Image 1: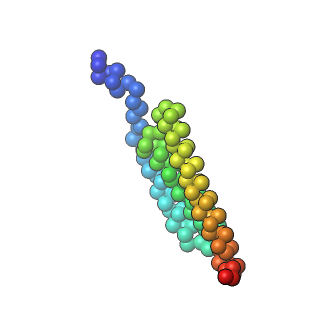
Image 2: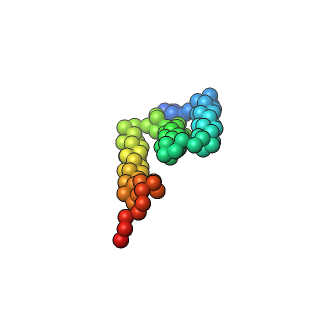
Image 3: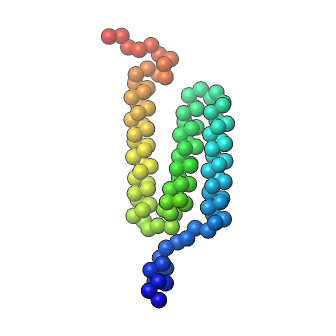
Length: 109
């Protein structure tokens, strides 16, 4: 009886769900390889980040079991994505302020 109550709150992801997520991750990997071969100009970075965010979301939701966790786990997972967005935004702001992707000359002085 004690074993039943100890494991009753844990969710076990089925093999089918794990294989579907694995297949989606492989498809996103193939999409990353295709996107790397295309010359889309300044959109290459944005597309690569979007694909990476989708892969990270799948890993967080299924392999880290956040999908079946409580609200606090969702808050911390969302906070991680918000922090990532802040860091990428600040990095891009710094990069752009130093010259628009190398198209503009650097400021004199």
